[in-house]
Image (tube, rainbow, N blue to C red):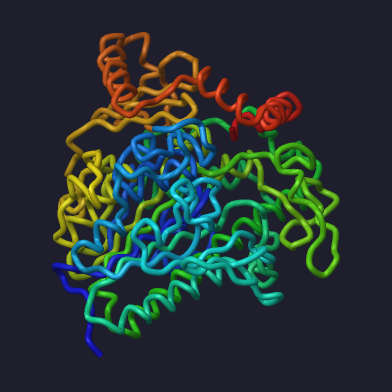
Length: 544
């Protein structure tokens, strides 16, 4: 057998999980059993200030292209909001990591969640619904639904899903392992995008995994936040002088919670979902070791946004997910304590209070640009080139992954592709950071998602929620964003606001009012339902 990959042109695995908070891995302070990711961290590099784009679609677009999502055509989600930055699918003026690496001889594979094309299904394959195989991947496997997907997607076709013994996390893992095995048929290195759906809602997990966590969360979310914060300080992931944020105002004190057993069960199922994902990472590591290519493989692991605080009502935008299971059981949609979570006959989320714990020590969540919404664990493992056990606090962004992969592969970012001019990358290679923990990114980082906006400039962060005023934080002394310095430092606010204004013009960002007007013209019923949820369930607003 020919061994693929080398210290100069490695195999590359880019692993992404969905809706996992900053503190949900053992090596980032969690009590959840994640021995395989902990192994990669202990033998690689952990980043403490790695940032995503606060939500699934924009993060994926940014991650895959090295651009702001607006520049790639996915400025919001996959709704079509007009040609250009908000068209809802990858445009032809960006290039994916897979397309770029194919230019230098890589085999390219993807297993899991795509969600950067049209309706998010990845099935249709026309210009407005690009599939992975249309954007550089040789082979693709995907499905939607933990237990009973309507179908599975393989390359350019669909097939019936197995009627039983199916669990999405395991299926994504198995497909990825099959792709690694297939890659050994040639002498070329491979790029594998392993994109797990876990631990995104609904709370669906296997009984044996749930059993591991039965009773573990009966002390509640207040205790959990404190325990994780202390562990993070002990691990050296956060500074001891950073205050933990107060419990979210929409989360009650644990002692006032009536349905404590049910609440603890929700967190237990969430933990089980993370646990099963880690088991899959372990199987991938085992396969790489069996093939004797682990040392020659660059493994990158991160999450697409912060923890998800979305409330799961029985009616509204998600009510259509009801019905029955294939064996005739009624699916109970909504966070209803009459039903225990975990099985296919329920459809729940773990809700704001537990998401608050997942994002320890930060505040806010998925959708928002405060640290809880954009901070992700980042683990990089490459034995041939990375010294083990490092922790770096270098600020970095998902846009940097494209440049990092090309740097590791000895490849260049192209100026054109298939006759289309390619927008210059906004990312910077993180390879120097893997060698030098004191490395710092050259350029500021900017965000805008639904007019939740921010600028990170060296140790300063300017951030705001939609139309609220700018807040300014010293990330060196106050990364938990507890002490707003905007009133004391108006010149710094002005300097950074100018950076944001230039970014808005460059990326084609629209205002929140424009966003709402466009969405109303496309689907007024959906917009009305979201406003209903804000009125009836105030905490749900944290998640949208």
